[in-house]
Length: 233
Length: 233
DNA sequence: GTCAACGGGATTGTCGACAAAATTGGGAAC
DNA sequence: GTTCCCAATTTTGTCGACAATCCCGTTGAC
Image (cartoon, rainbow over all chains, first blue to last red):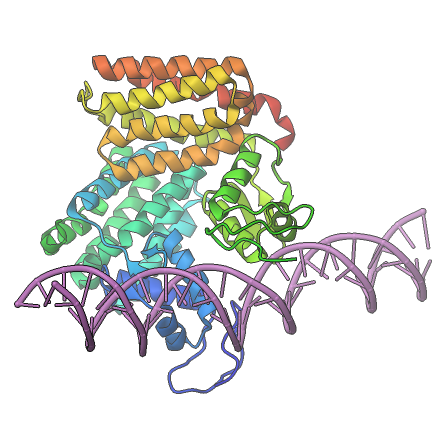
């Protein structure tokens, strides 16, 4: 056993059976995806030492990553008791999605339409990236491309705080969304909705855009509420 | 020198000229107030060792407090460069207040009216606490009581995420609000508005409530925008 | 049989010390 | 006089080790 990874600077290969070194951001992304894709279940405990061993990192690094995951509200930390994957009750899911709908439709109303022609190509490129990931059946890439696409859209609403808040709430909803991300059919539906959003942005049909934003994440909410009656308390 | 404070457990007195020990949450509150009341200016740098010496804490504890202040968005941390009190450009102030207005008026619309008679006494008590602090001219107590009052009101909107988001944005706006908190006249104006809000909640006059929520923080925005033209970039 | 006190082991939290990075000030070259 | 570069200093970041806390199974009393 030698030199475990430091924070962000990836060092050379070490050894040890189960210690493939990784950078802090890579570990963060991996854990994020473990949660989003349901490999880590709500309420499941994360043990610092285990995570450190898995990624060949020090416990200190893992600890910092945990505080970041906590900031993202993907996990919850209880003093002296450790970190748990966050779980939402059906009532909370309902409230979270109500708020998201309110904010995203409001943001859609604020975007100047039609979008300037300079703004369209980047959005188009992101949509293509998403579509390609769907075609390849690469759920991880779909997940990342989806985030990037939505961020880019709401960046045009003219209010950085609104855009940030939307993104944060989207992050919190990731725990809920994993059911959606798994099925090829729903990924394709999302892809088609993205294309329709782009059309609406291009043509300046605001009502269509607003309706699309509202409809976009409904399936995820319903899937979660249908699947997890056990989370009622 | 001896035993500097650990995290939350306050230990006995140590010694050293400038090292009065304090708990982590006390240090956090003190720094928060330093920022809110303008004793620390936007862009001003916070040096870990200095803060540690001032409060008789270890640098480790200060470091954790900084990450908490960063989470509250009161400071900004740049890797290997340290922590700065956050500064907002006039455009950002405008956007922040726009969003707060949108969320707070929406929350006001969601509160079931008139409020149940069981819910009123706690709100009344908080309002009294605020009024007492204003009468005593204790800006620190006014600040805390104001936060508690608003949190208690928006807790009734039926959406924990909306309430949380409102509170977080309020926290971010604290850096901006300090001008308001200093003048006795504006504290008294706030106190009267709180009383009016309570009346509206009691009587179920929703339009009045919504208007009050919207009007409540306008002066702070305007004060900031008037006073800090230098923050234009 | 139930319950409370008590340890042993597992896990998280904190410390002092060291390493890495950035800033500053001074001097050499032009 | 100005610019560039380097070294010394300041400041932040990370490590290994230790301490505190919690969990859980065991024991013993009633």
